[in-house]
Length: 441
Ligand SMILES: [Zn+2]
Ligand SMILES: [Zn+2]
Image 1: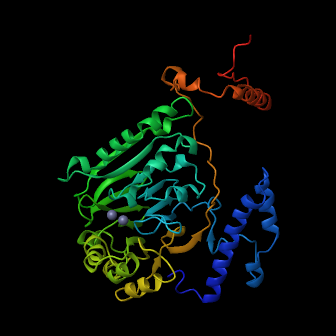
Image 2: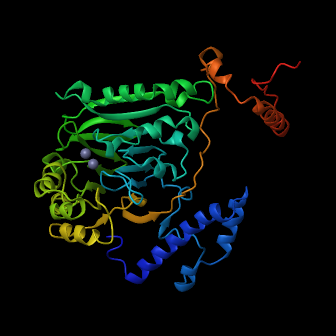
Image 3: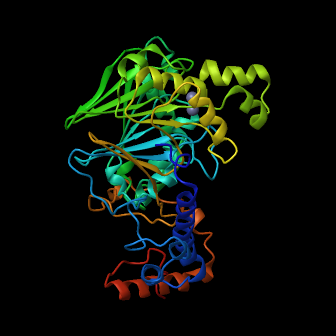
């Protein structure tokens, strides 16, 4: 089913209005009532008051309509069910409406995997209200910024974000490509780039999540197993996208998920993704669209849409050749004026089931088929608790701001800070000493 293109227009309007009402209510809570603790009151009010959209298009049941929307944190997966969420569906340049590519795969056995983590995707991943310790495996298809640009943010804000576990990343390298282009070298440099940030935080917060485990795999191998645990097998096939690029295939309990990352359609994809339950493949702007929307020259437009990426007609053809049970097109700007052009181009070469991805589109995949909904993100999300009790670095390892810098503290702050410590200790029953306390004269 092509969400947005086959629904009757009345229902589509209801979908849009209800979505806006939900998001509007969430924003309104923060903007209109700044008092602490108002969230639950406002939520109660929203539950008891029918929205204007509901009044115009009456439905049975509560305001929450899980038939059409996915509310993160409210649904357990069946033991043999897979849920995939688009946390980035757009083009390389991130924008407010669509982050660069990122897909979260959640399995009924509790395992979660992130495929690509493009610019702008971190806040979307976090808005799904999953404790970050559960999202600790990231697979990068190639080292373009639109496929891994948010890795530093996702990793380095782990301590503040409730992550207590190390992060595990997989990425391509080897196969004759220069070693300095590989995932290992890239992650070494990421570590170095953020050395100051990591070093100065030691001792002020639990920084154990800075531990990073990198697995670099040979991108040239075909159907190469790079992960095998708890009944989950993840394989890579080479992609045609410069060099050192791959596509991923995840198999679990008889379900097959295929994710192209970036590629020109190729023989490996044709052979190894046949009949996939969910086949997510890039579907780039057509060459004329690049001229209209991106001011590309004709040569630049053709290069981008046919030699480096998969233009919409090519997407349709590869889906016709592989016949997935359910196809998803992504990596294009999904706007009211672009979508019809993309749909028309895809339909030149493919007549099967396909969704045209937007951020927060959600797919529930079982052997019976795939169900598509839009997820309702929490735009005001706060960190969820880590799995492990917090633990500070040993005294000897803790970072200390140089004395002369601390001596620059505005002296009239000292009584204010002392008051904060006194009040805090009284409120929380603690006895944490104020390290800035002046010696009593
Ligand atoms: Zn790319
Ligand atoms: Zn890309």
